[in-house]
Image 1: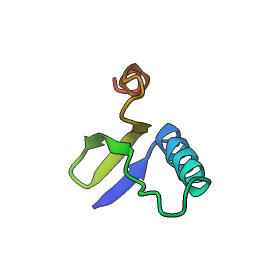
Image 2: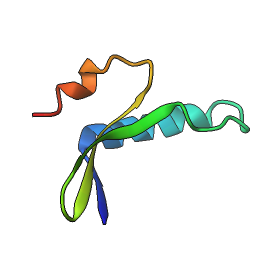
Image 3: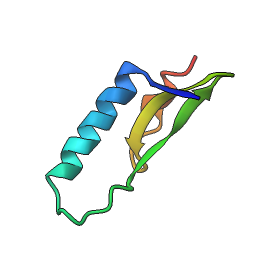
Image 4: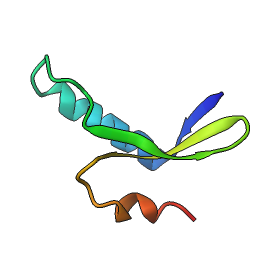
Length: 64
């Protein structure tokens, strides 16, 4: 199975990693959802990585 990130989701993941890397070293990295995706027979396309309190309209506009 291939996991492919859209450019927007990849940028969001990078941003989240950078933010968490500047927080406490013992902070658990679990306040982002990587659950907005499209599933195809041979791959899963990740379309959004976002904090659960973020406005869902941001990622919904990416789904056609």
